[in-house]
Length: 360
Image 1 (spheres, rainbow, N blue to C red):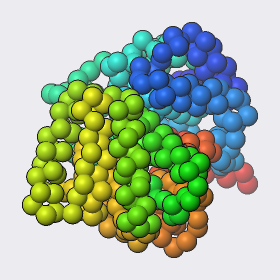
Image 2: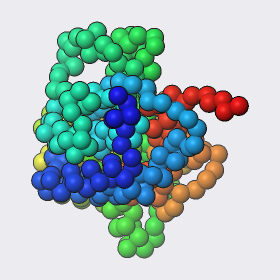
Image 3: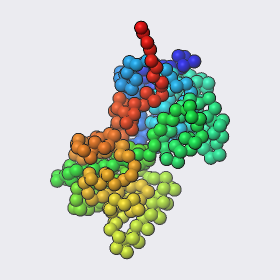
Image 4: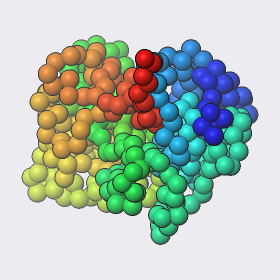
């Protein structure tokens, strides 16, 4: 069955191009900038040469076979992640069950473009609340998990020992302004880059910067004022998040009145906020720009692994920076190369079992 499921890079690229032309212009459903970014990335993926290079980088020339049946549990906030699961299954020849809700129609049309049916690729609409784990995992050989520690712990308990768990757990990403620009033009470019990286996907994916390191108090003050002036024109956060932001802002303002070292600015309309505080997460808003005065040594304080580090004006390679799984110029934190490892792992290699082939 796997041989019938497997698609070549040329076939996957062709299916992607066909699929993209059939989609409405406002897919995926997100703010304008995120929708445009996702479409650009997908158009880049719809290139046979790019996918051929990815297969070569991930799998090399060693003999391998598909796992068999893979269940993908990927948050739909990561619009590209769910499409990537479909592509990975196609390139490796695995049968797929993909959890989806809002994107059902679009993902099923991609499945159709690949020439698959329901038996090859089940795109299921189910709620995680009260799900029947035994039924869901019956016949599954691998599970792709992208989410919280609680999600990963759940499937570690529920899955049989033979099931391979392909885990992408919570990661921390950060922005670092190594040098505050002197010129007004460069300051504007730096701020635009930080806003882009933070607001794409509404700061809801692992490559979103969770805090911003600034080189000194003066730079932090200037950046705080510049970001506060831009909060009202950022894409609105969901209503529930805006409420959480408002409640947390009231708490931080009270702490500031009591002498705690924190400043906060919040736009009630969009819900976005900027804070200037120590690195203690107790001072962090649920979403927004968390400015911390300090250098790269501050990267050693958060407990989560560091996934992406966006640096202004340009990426550096030092002992602290090397702790990040991906380093880039600020403004490009979501643009990890297709052929680069994801969280330190070759993606397609986790969807297969490498086999020994004795030719003697």
